Length: 133
Image 1 (cartoon, rainbow, N blue to C red):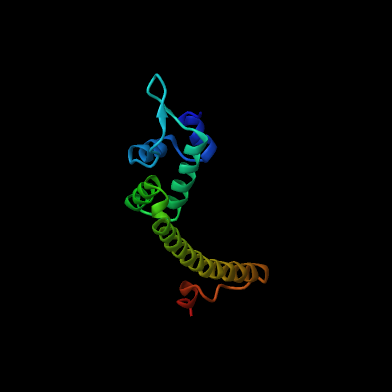
Image 2: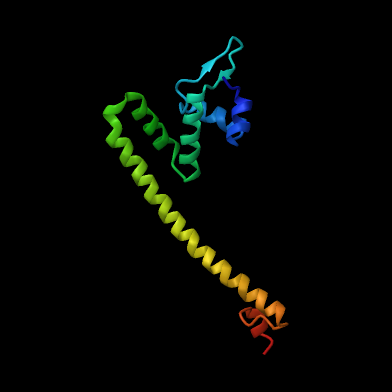
């Protein structure tokens, strides 16, 4: 069993965030010790992993709660959970595509600046340099 502090360190999530997620119902099976402190099992860590993943890609808390409720219901909800994960994956792939486009631009600009610095040239793309003409 793990304390909330241990889980926070192990999963790289703040204690505050874990408490918020717990209050939101994301960890339905977390138990409490005699001092009323949350105790996370290895299985609970799997819940933390999926919640962390879903939050990291922008899934709303309401949708995460729905996913967890479906998990609790059981295997009769497998198709619905599959669709949630598939839809979420598509959103992430779109995010990755958008980030790759941004990365291309940044790589281009990095190379551009490297070149003008190396060759002691003026930045021809800077509008301020054009106003000097």
